[in-house]
Length: 201
Image: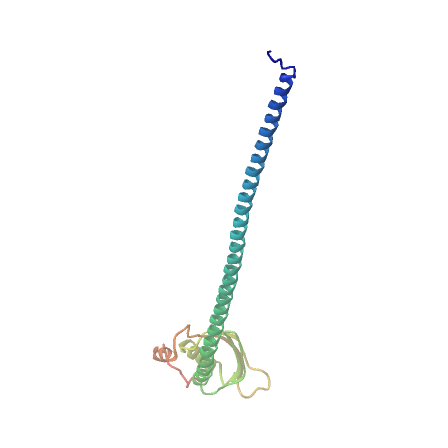
């Protein structure tokens, strides 16, 4: 006799297709999760590597900054050292200039003239003294003009004070001549323009 299947085969077939669909869907979800996790690990590795490079760059930048600060400090020390050397050289030159100046003052003072006061303010010189006559003051001014260590004599006043039997009182201004970097031998080798006159009346 022929057999007749009375089971609901269509319903069974739907269940099988539905089960296959869910299995495929689960497999796809698992695959997507695996891919996503792999991408996460890859991106995390790339980020970690970049952060490591950034940290190294920051360290190198700090090292370079310290080196730049040291270079700047060395440059500042160099400038201060140069400034001190210039001051020392200037003091050495001015020391010899003072010696030459006082020696020159004694040489330019004519006979019958003496100083009561001498002051210096920078390169400005002020002479106060007494001369037997105004002619000797003029002689003193000509000697200053001819000097290689003094220049620009200007007479402020010359007068004969009552009761002063020695001579005429005078106040005279002048300027000091600096070497401007020339050494003493060069200054000494320069010819003097004019000669000191000591016998004016």
